[in-house]
Amino acid sequence: MKFYNVKTRKSVEIPDSDVTVVTMKNGRKAAKAEENGMKLFKILSKEDAMRLS
Image (cartoon, rainbow, N blue to C red; front, side):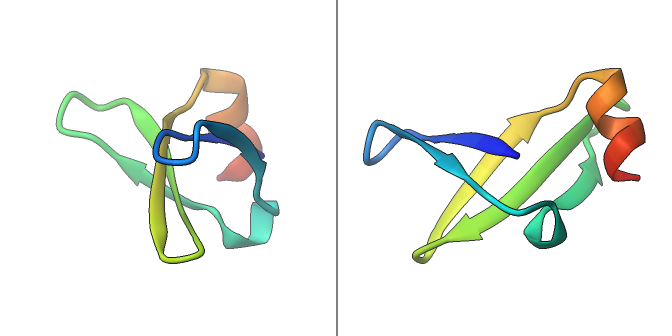
């Protein structure tokens, strides 16, 4: 899955096995990952949320 690292201003590819799916307060699904000690966060589309679940 592709994340955008705000600190380094680059796109980062993270394997799906290292991605955690969480539910936000409003009910939407989001993906969390960590790379080089930096936390990455991405709001998921319905298709991506179903694929990762």
